Image 1 (cartoon, rainbow, N blue to C red):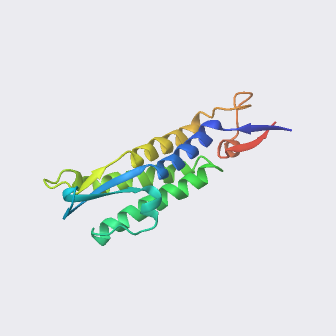
Image 2 (image 1 turned 30 degrees about the horizontal axis):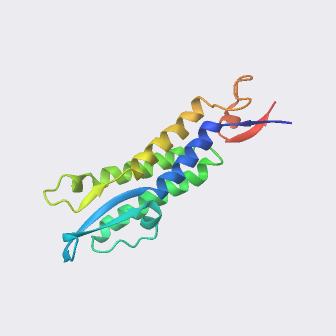
Image 3 (image 1 turned 180 degrees about the horizontal axis):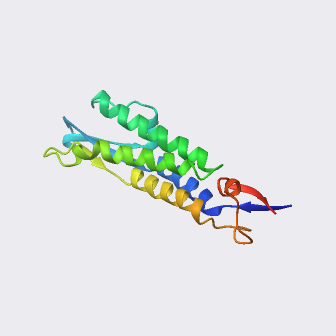
Length: 157
């Protein structure tokens, strides 16, 4: 029995995991800390934001952090099974980028965007792209039916 593996979809899922491990935001807090100046800073990865504990910011922004990371984590877990998980990955990354964009342009920088949501957006784009152009063993043998396209690993005929 031959198996068809959509390696592009699996690569998108692995990059999604890397996105959750990378830094999503750096927050600067007012207050004097010896040796650090008048602002202290804290870096948050996607897994930190999933814990829903980010002190010193508004609850609305904490909810944005949490919901976007939940969407990306759910999409990444789903992407190991089906490329449709890429839609959740893109939704989580775009939600984070669009909801936090007003804070990038403030005169007082207390929020600094990092690579995590951008990596998540790339992972989602790869995963969604793998629906239309699957890459991997036995993906080019013959036309793939719709059900096989929507699975990361399926039986090849």
